[in-house]
Image (spheres, rainbow, N blue to C red):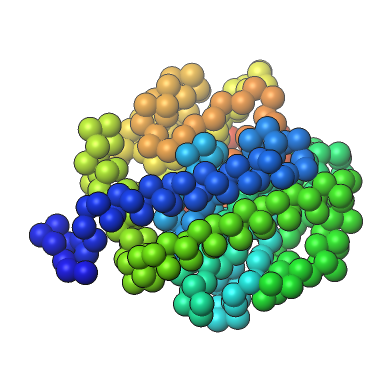
Length: 341
C-alpha cells in the first residue's frame, strides 16, 4: 500500500469495495436479528447494529437503524473497553443496557462482541434491540411514574454472556428471570449475539481476502470519508470550533405544558432565549429555540417519560439535579441558569 496525494493508503476501488462490504455486513446483521428475534418490538424493527473500531468508535451502522440507537452505540463499546480493558478475548460477548454508560432506556439492550482475526483485535460488533420487558414496576418496563431507576427495570452494567465462546447460561438466566418474558429475552439475546458473530465471521473473511492491514486501514479511512462528507456537504457545513450546551425549562403558568430545550445555541440566540423565558413569552422562546438549536428540542403537553429523560440528562449536565427528576418543576432560578450558561 502507498499513500496517494489525498493522504489515503487504499486505492479508490478497494476502498469502495470494503466500504460497501461493511454496509452489507451491518445489513446482514439486521436481517439476522429480524428473522430470529423473539420480541414483537424487535420484529417491528426497533433495533440497530454497528461495527466499531478497537477504540469503540463507529465504523459502520445499519442503513435502516434508529438514530437514537446508533448515535450512542460507540459509548457502549467504550464502556466495555473501560470496564474490561485487556481482559477481552476471542469469543467473548457482553450485554448491557446501562443508561449511564451509553444506553438510551433500559429496554434497549446492547450485545457487544469483540472482533478478532486470529489473535488480532480489530474492533467490535454491536447489536441493540428493544427487549419487550426488562422488569420494573409495570409490564413493558415503561413506567412514567417511576421515582428511581429501580422501578423502571433491571439495570445491566456490562457483563459477559459468552466467555471465549462458552455460553454463560447462569448469567443469561439471571437477567431473563428478572423479566416477565424470560424465554423471549433469552431468544432475543441469542439472536443479537448471533448477529454479532456473523459480523465477526464476515470481517474475518475480508481479512483472508485483503489482509488484516488493509482492513484496519479501511476502518480509519471509512471514518475519515464520513467526516469529509459531513463537513463539505452543502446541507451541513461544520467548522472547527468549540460547541456549548444549554438546557432550559419553563412552566407555562395556568396550563400543563412545559418547554424543554436541549441543545447548542448560536451565541447571538442564547441571550434572547433567556429573555423571552423571563418575560413569560414561552411560545416565542420555543420558536427561537427551534431555529437556533443545533441538536433538538422537545415540547410535551403531558410530560411523559421520554420528555422526563431528556430533561434529566440536561439538568444533570448543568449540575441542577443529580437524582430522580419528576414533575412538577419550577422555573429556572438565576443560579441554575448561571450554572447552565
